[in-house]
Amino acid sequence: MGRLSKGGWVSKLGWTMVRGLGPMLAVLLAGQTLGAGGPSALDRVKKAGKLVIAIDASYPPMEFEGPNGQPIGFDVDLGNEVAKKLGTKAEFVVMNWDGILAGLTSKRYDVIMSSMNITPDRQKQVDFVEYVRLSQLYMAGPGVVLDQEKALQGKVIAVQADTTSSEYVDGLKKKGIAVKEVKAFKTATDCFAALRSKHVDGIVIDEPVGRYYAKQDPKNFFVTGRAMAPEPIGIAIRKDEQDLKAALEGAVASLKKEGVIKKISETWFGAELGQ
Image 1 (spheres, one colour):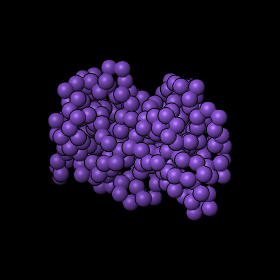
Image 2 (image 1 turned 60 degrees about the horizontal axis):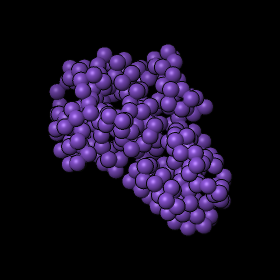
Image 3 (image 1 turned 45 degrees about the vertical axis):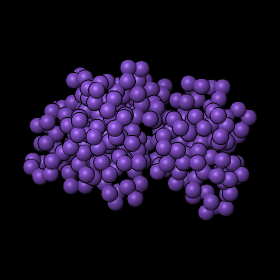
């Protein structure tokens, strides 16, 4: 994540410290701690000249670390376009997924744009601006077919912790489907490492991530079925910042109308997401 002024990157040193010393110190080094009170949220962003966006850079191709250490992916490209619509630049802060919502509510950054499903539980904490819909896929290795819920019976399944995927697999037990074990990993990368090493039988994962890994390593990773219909993904924002939320809604609507979101989707996935 070698972030320079163009595109709003934090310095190379800052990114190295993000990876090594944890979210809170990284935020302080990048100048991300946001003060309370003062002007409205939208005014604050415009005055700062940047929209500070939190991502979990372990979810390719939505958001991940590029060859030069900089964050790249669908959400990064779209985040830059959204910021332009607000008349500012995007600056990305890399956070661990398990602390990303807490960082938003404690005002460490302006928004989260990191493939976050809009769920009732999350809506109790924050507001959302929907920008795309994603489905969930079953993934497996060679010779393993997970094409429906019943096929997970007796299998060891990997999920990323604290995600819709993990909630889905946990919910199968209530339906009487005896999944042998659910292994919750910190990152999607860890899930696929476990599948490659045959420590798990399969994965439930967001569609773009699954298709990306299947494209990168077609000998080890296979899309074997669709677990869930497309669900809404949104930009998370604090509940008391309605002026910024309205501006983000307007930005997303414009980008959809202009075909920008479709173009970014085609760049990363070869097709429009959720279609």
